[in-house]
Length: 116
DNA sequence: GATCTGACATTAA
DNA sequence: ATTAATGCCAGAT
Image (cartoon, rainbow, N blue to C red; front, side, top):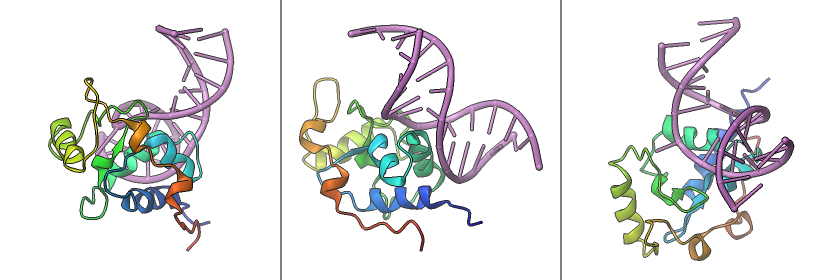
């Protein structure tokens, strides 16, 4: 049985563990969550369970490096400032330089338990 | 209870 | 190379 809501839960774990000055995109998180194509669910997970206290959604961006289009916390401008405050570099297109800030699962070293 | 929508990414044509 | 369609999880209607 089990609701298997691990996905949503893992998403939080991952985003929660994103170090300062680093950004991840939904695809990476979805893969870590166990579903390489659940990128949608990842974004929705953050939207459904807004917990900025522990989940820095502003560190999660598109694979292209573009910022979240519907940033609920105040808009892209908010996310842009937050990331910039993290010393994250941007391009002229307001896209995060994933080349320098892309965090992979190998670097994460996260220990996520799919079953508690 | 079923159906659709929604912070995207990947694969196919 | 670009555009189209599909897949995915959970919440909302």
